[in-house]
Length: 249
Image (cartoon, rainbow, N blue to C red):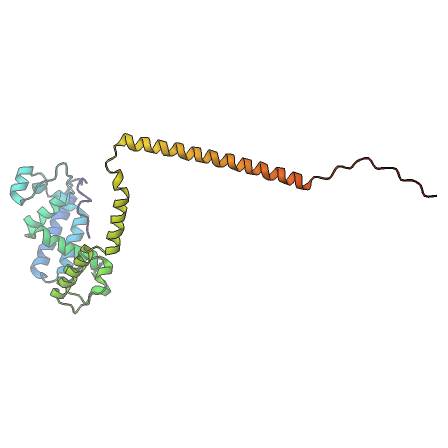
């Protein structure tokens, strides 16, 4: 889906070339709407190309309108601080020059952007679908579109979309139980003030430090006892003065 907010603060110099290009796009789109009104893909492709060119920024009779004039003429608010590349000027241009409202323009462009192989044609996997079907598929995620077939009616597609919404709106019970258990675990701390929590944390840190100190003392005593036992077990017996043996004659 096209992000129509990405250019709201961009500024395009309004040169003679830009104005001529804007007029050329307008004339080309008028011809397509008159002669090829049923070929929505190429109309959408031309609109998308026009939008990316940002030559609509050269339409100063629209861009230079005051907020009040813009509101009265197009029925929508002019974005405060917007650059002349703002998409609001693009939609205003399409309405004023081509008699295409915002929702129509958005659908035409997004179908091309989402399902088109550039500006040439639909991608292979979407060629068998009608334009109306593809419009219905626009809000769906790619993996949610996979089950839909070209022979599905618009009603069947809409019913399928409703089933997806119902499924996502109903939480699974195990998840709900886990959330409840998690909340119950900490409910006794909800009424504690910040100082009380800080005091409790300090107390627990002191208890942990004391416990670690006692463990180290115990380990040292145990090591000393083991060393003493080992020394006693492996020490040699003391040898006294030996008596002189009588010679055997």
